[in-house]
Image 1 (cartoon, rainbow, N blue to C red):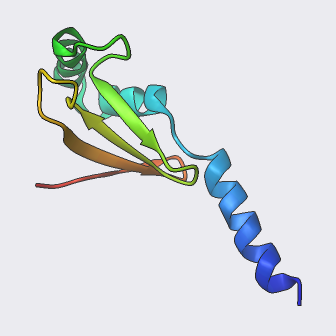
Image 2 (cartoon, one colour):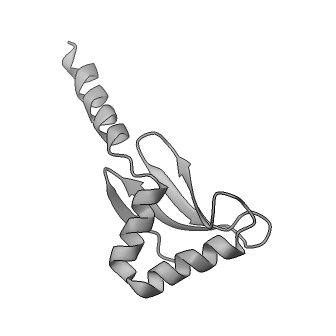
Length: 92
C-alpha cells in the first residue's frame, strides 16, 4: 500500500536533486555553442537591467525554465527547460 506513494516521492526527490541551476545552463551553452554562445551570454548580461544577468530561471523544484529578457529592456523569451540535469530547448 505504501509503494504507490513511495515511488513518486523517490522520483520527485531525484528530480529535485538533479534540477539544473543557472550556472549549469551557462556551461551547457558554452559547450554547445562555443565562442558565439559565450559572447551571446555576455551581451545578454550587458543588455539586462538586473543584477542577476541576462539568463534567469523560474524554479519549479523538479524542473526549471530558463529565459532571457522580461526586465523592461527586452521582452521575455523562454529559451529552455532544465530537467534531471539535461536541457530541452524551446523551439519557436
